[in-house]
Amino acid sequence: MSLCPICGRAMCDHTSIERGQTEDEMMAPLTPEEAKAWETELPDSPRKVEAGRRAKEEQRRKRILQ
Image 1 (cartoon, rainbow, N blue to C red):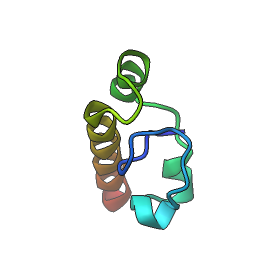
Image 2 (cartoon, helix red, strand yellow; image 1 turned 180 degrees about the horizontal axis):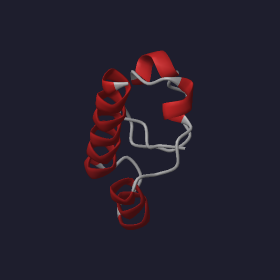
Image 3 (tube, rainbow, N blue to C red; image 1 turned 135 degrees about the horizontal axis):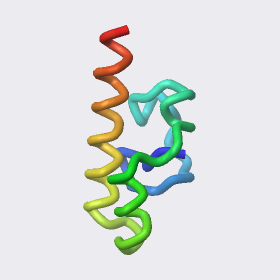
């Protein structure tokens, strides 16, 4: 599950609508950047949130181009 672009957690109470993602995007495997943040950062780290935001933006770009 991708990191939440709101709180940086993999599993949280934010809905796909709140996250700005489709269900499939929300359930996507972690990107390498998200995985690194997940492994090296503390819970609620701003770096985790930023990794989740970047992954969300990349997913959005791909969705728009389709």
